[in-house]
Length: 41
Image (cartoon, rainbow, N blue to C red; front, side):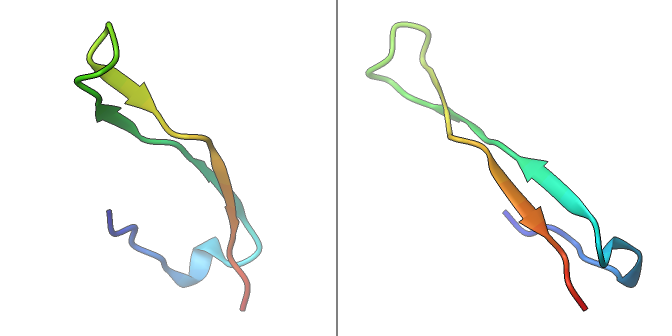
């Protein structure tokens, strides 16, 4: 999934996590582990 990055994001950290379809799960959904992304110049 592309995430647009601009100069204003330098020095910031963002947290991302994704929900996905998981037919083997009783709810039909799965959740990834989170990741922290830091933007550097």
